[in-house]
Image (cartoon, rainbow, N blue to C red; front, side):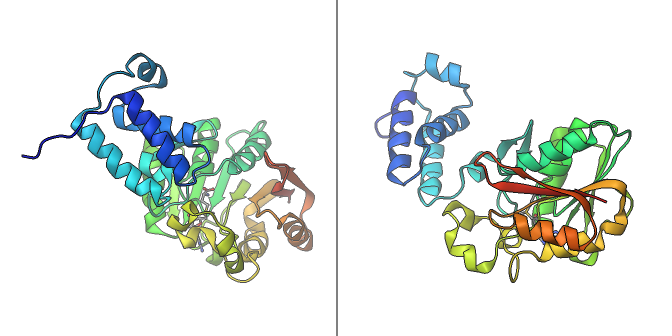
Length: 285
Ligand SMILES: C[S@@+](CC[C@H](N)C(=O)[O-])C[C@H]1O[C@@H](n2cnc3c(N)ncnc32)[C@H](O)[C@@H]1O
């Protein structure tokens, strides 16, 4: 058996983690160090404050070493923690699925507002990923029926876990290709955050994004293919007065408004994200 080296207190582990994260170029090293220490100790922020002079166990120390090896090569924190808060709910995440983004909360808020006065609304979430959009709406409106369409099994297994985690049993997962019209039906609301990054913008993505599936991010050509196909193919699946709402890339809002206009939608409008960028484009049939 090998001897254990010098034992580390929670306080030392936190300071050391924070320093190493900052040295690896991670911006919010304080937030992340706290999250990692909570994760390895199972303690809350308050419990950490009252137990900061306690030693880490050998298991916790080994776990911290392994996590830091991953994080220093910019493997996403969310994948390490295994779950992430989005909107009002929690979602399991890991390799194979897109990490829910803050910006996408704008799409959920816009969609949720639209559903406010609807009775038993029928909702379709295209390109569902972790299920963060569809499940959030299903939780906000227990009388809604939400269909989520996803093409890839690696992502869909997180949808299944997230339905269970959130007990969102008013949802249905449909495996299929949105470009082929999977999930067509009759809906009050169709939402989608499809892959929209053109290959030419790949180099602009941060280090962490490189660990996320390209199938969730990249879209051939100008990045607008899903918007064109959905606006056209799924119009017949929208009830009169129903809303189609998209998340769009930072420079795509005008083009997506044009696509909706060309397809005869009305009340076309955009909604800004927390940085003031037009992030959601929605319209009514
Ligand atoms: C940008 S991610 C969005 C995931 C999730 N809706 C979110 O907002 O975090 C796009 C998702 O579309 C899925 N996808 C890609 N091509 C698809 C297709 N042709 N049909 C259905 N889903 C597709 C990807 O696997 C990925 O989960």
